[in-house]
Length: 146
Image (cartoon, rainbow, N blue to C red; front, side, top):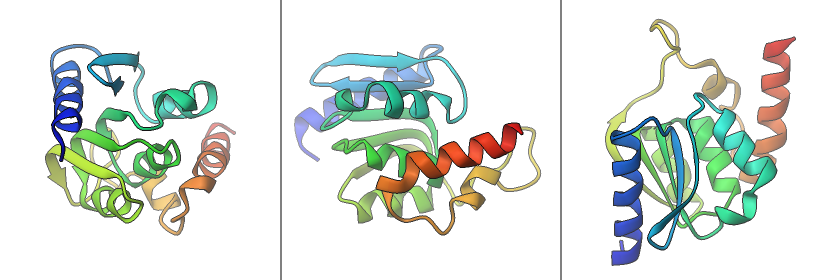
């Protein structure tokens, strides 16, 4: 990892650890976007409204599973940092040439409150193409609300 990527990932880590931010986009030495919303909403919002700011930047997210990794990869960042990142997310990002960095790894995510595996990651298990991620996740989220 080059020094500028290391510095950007570290800035993302600090912002996520020491505040209410749940998602940050770091370009150079500046946080150019952040969110305090939970779940997939911040990444979906970023991909829908401001995808250009993530290209070549470092995306930092509190929790990165398969679904978040697919969506992040569709934005073409140089790296993705997760306070918690699944093994599958690491592999997926690396397969697409995106550096994955993390504070802690877990084998898989579970639903809030514990119990079953994270349903969004299970629903996206067969999807490997980041270009299809936003549409697939949109369909998944719409189906969940209905």
